[in-house]
Length: 405
Ligand code: PA5
Image 1: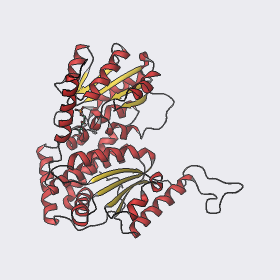
Image 2 (image 1 turned 90 degrees about the horizontal axis):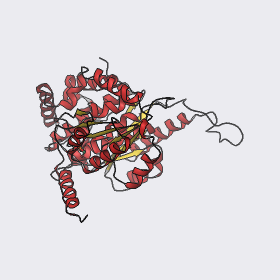
Image 3 (image 1 turned 45 degrees about the vertical axis):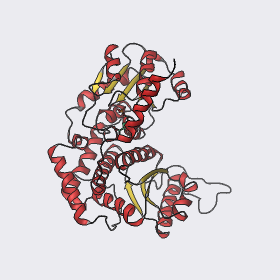
Image 4 (image 1 turned 120 degrees about the vertical axis):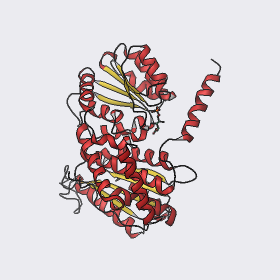
């Protein structure tokens, strides 16, 4: 299978703690893949579960103009990243993601919806996340019988409440953490409802995975992990900016931020991920990256935009803009920024996507999951679980229980 040409350049960087450690980390990750201990990635090679998922998505889409996805963190960021790819279409439901319990947002999103034409998709692995449980139960009651589906773990308040109401619950694989779950139904069911090709997402991910198996420490995710850890530990570059030069890819950058931060921010280690949007953040954050403390490095996600969109012409158009399309401007801005960064000594790598489609995004998902897992091995932290977050969840539940009614 051909690897999508998703990487244009990846500079080599001295690795910390060294090539031998990188080789050992890759062997360890490959062995875990072989043992079936990384189901978040192994699922890329499956398609036996997809017919049932496609049928369910078609049933929901046929019966709804709007779909509310209630889920937070890893239970919605992957779906958001995928859904952002969907082109505008004349028919088919609009997807609204509720990942926050702001009562104002609740009113704004649900206020205008027609209950008989809206479906709720409630996603929570633990089934206990307060925000998701509260939003889901409110929405389920507002929408009425049969208009909700959950994806949840085997136990928990969400499953109990859905089962008590006779609503369907799909199983969330207990071995897959939320932020690693985008290739499972949590990412793919919303993507299918949005009209995307889930099989292509998995195929893209499988290709990146095959490449990692074949090349090990020379594969792009391994080099990327070594670069990220090397820049952080060896050169004081503690902040990794993920800058998407396509609005459709900004939600992907946000997915990456959670993956990297929640997986590696442990035992006083890890580096700080920041999501950015090109070109807008050139006029917001770029000054700091180039001339602030030398703590940043930048990953650019770019798509081919040259020649796309309209070109200004007529009276008063400056000479360098005449006949240039919006896509030409985007391309020039991206290239100029990469050159400015490089010239200022800010490390920068570019992922060039020929087309930001399902297959390319699937490859990027697998790439960054692998990069994160290998980095975890290099940093000697467990990239799974999020104990610091769980503590806050427990405290919030206890506070609510103790509040006067
Ligand atoms: O990546 C993770 O596991 C977390 O971000 C969770 O997705 C998030 O905390 C929501 O948890 P749950 O899916 O249990 O509601």
